[in-house]
Amino acid sequence: MIIQRYLSRQILGTTTAVALVLTVILMSGRIIKYFGMAADGRMDVSLLTAVLVYRLPGFLELIVPLGMFIAIMLVFGRMYMDNEMTVLSASGVSRAKIATHLAWPVMLITALVALTSAHITPSGNAESERLFAAQAERNTFDLVKPGRFQHIGNRMLYAERLSEDRRQLLGVHLFEQHPVSNGVPREIMVQAQRGRRVMEGGEAYLVLEDGVRHDLVAGDPVRREIRFDRYRVLLPQPVALEKPIKIRSYSTPDIWAQRPQNNAARGEWIWRLSMPIMVPIVALLALSLSRVNPRQGRYLKLFPAILLYLSYVIAIAAVRNSVEKGKLDDGTIWLVHAGYLLLTLGVFNFDALRVGWQRLRNKRAVA
Image 1: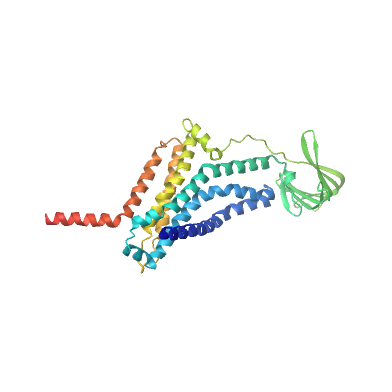
Image 2: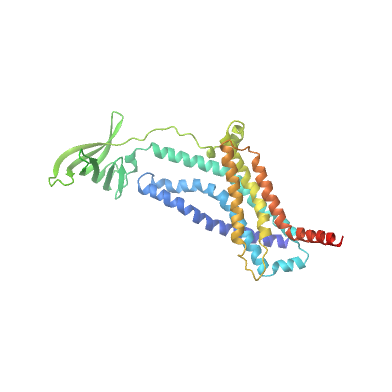
């Protein structure tokens, strides 16, 4: 019991630390992408946190098993380096017994991955799709932020500030460019004191007040200037498209119900089922590969082990894609799991297999 508590504490603590680091690394690219969309005016900044939270479970269902895999490699690598495994072996604690001590933390992580894969990730995907759909339906004027250059259709808009009631833009600058007959661009720059949105005939307009319009043509020294009291600009309206809901946003019961007639549902079912099945297999694989000589260093086998883990995930993804395209039957995934399970058992029992093979060779030599 003491050994089990010690190993559980070490594995769970290290898994949490590794998973946090991997989450920060992998989520940073998505964060940069969303910040870029917000800076371009294609996403409301207020949605960033919600979208990231909804997308996070999709990363965790891959990060947590990898974090556990690396944690087992690191923990037992250190124990081999510090001769703790030698002491346990001398005390009668075999590797098989140690594997049983790992059952509790591995089962806990398996349950977490199963819950994430089957329920939390689909729910998060559905909510993020809902947010993006609502975002696409908003008028482009709704995304204008004071103090930033933003695209409004084929125009560039800049507003210095908002009015106190936040219904008008103040200090508005509008820039657009049009090609003329000879290919020389014609530039139009509009400056206005105020700007507001109005609806007329089902169309949205940006109405600028008290300003001036400058018409410039490259190579023409003459600048045309027009002062105005009101200047209307048609705002592009979002195209209302009925986008089909992605299969990865469906609930697991819906996926199961659609499996007989939907290849995409079969592929998604394979993925959700494979994530928790993979956890105990890679846990035993990590335990098998963590054995090192103190002179070799605890990190000797870490990189090859991670490559082996990634090959497992890639194999699952490849079968999933082939099933979605109708090229493979969904039962093919069991061959992948069986193959890696046999590989894991072979690595785990490598010493016993080697001794048995040596005995067989000796018997044949004597005969």
